[in-house]
Length: 224
Image (cartoon, rainbow, N blue to C red; front, side):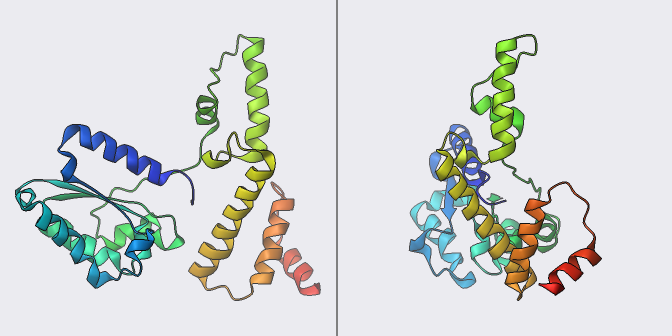
């Protein structure tokens, strides 16, 4: 999902790698950087070519390539597959669009991948972030846990919203909803009736954890 912390995890991987290998052996590229726009498939070759021009001695060493939001470049998997087969390279890829589902990556890269799905904070991680140490034998600790649970159930576990003002947090979550529902889902399934999707979305959010009858929904929406 968007804004779940994929880039932060990628930075952490880069940081750990730089403790094990020379700093120059770790390459990080964010494809949402406006200085790369518009980057097309045929231009991707310039990235490694430029790197080896700067560090020709690295041709004989293993390098680590970290590609953030790679789905921005159409048919990126063709390039990744080729350099993986022909260079001494380990590649880390992140993406949050509906165009980058793990099952499709595995198909595109012909089984050369290990996929990890990144989620927002679990409640356990939420407590760690809030620096609350669970102790079920302490009434004070339980009070903190219950208070944190109430906030977690209402506001969720997106890192950007934690410790933010209520009004700002709601605005951030509203923006996430717009991006996920009205961009990723609409783009992926070529949905043309956006007003119906908006109505369905509102219905689902106001009827959480209730059974849904598709016939009832159909008749209700048709009458509207």
